[in-house]
Image (cartoon, rainbow, N blue to C red; front, side, top):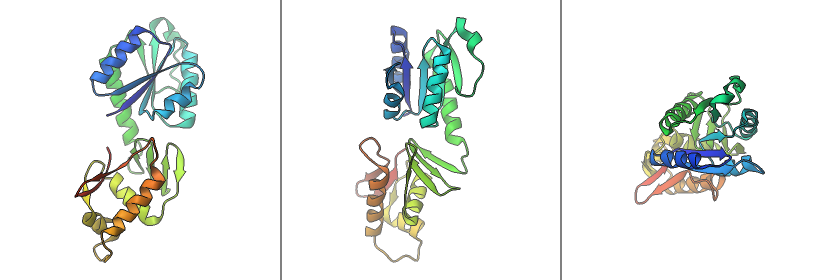
Length: 219
């Protein structure tokens, strides 16, 4: 389920829009513009941000601030009478003219999210805030670099490359350590525990234990 955060100036229409998006399978939350709005939005770990403010220059400013912290797709909701201010600047990924339909935003959001998830697909693996750069052998969570050992990295890479699939400890031993490895299942448990201590916290849970079977990385 994708998470959408909305930066808004308030109003019943945005409340109705969020309700419809929620009915269509999105997790939708709103934050009023002002103060530490970007920090509040990023704390929710969204997959996409909608900016619903009348001032388009403010929408661009918010988008710049968000992208400086995290490479999230941003969609602006624009009043028709302010279309002359829209210059196609790359700070904003897409825009929708108000009044807008939830279905249009849903389709645009899914297109952007697919594009984001497929971008550099051969080089990057993404799972929410977790990003693996396969070229640089780097892992980050929420933009913060994570230091892993080689086997921790290989284990995470295998799980991340097969998101949602459950693997037994024996299967993980065979695929990550190799068929000629004679260590026991305990090896997998130890590495999973170490991985969790490095990439998970109170706001991030990536690896799930499937009782009596094994492990999987959440989709």
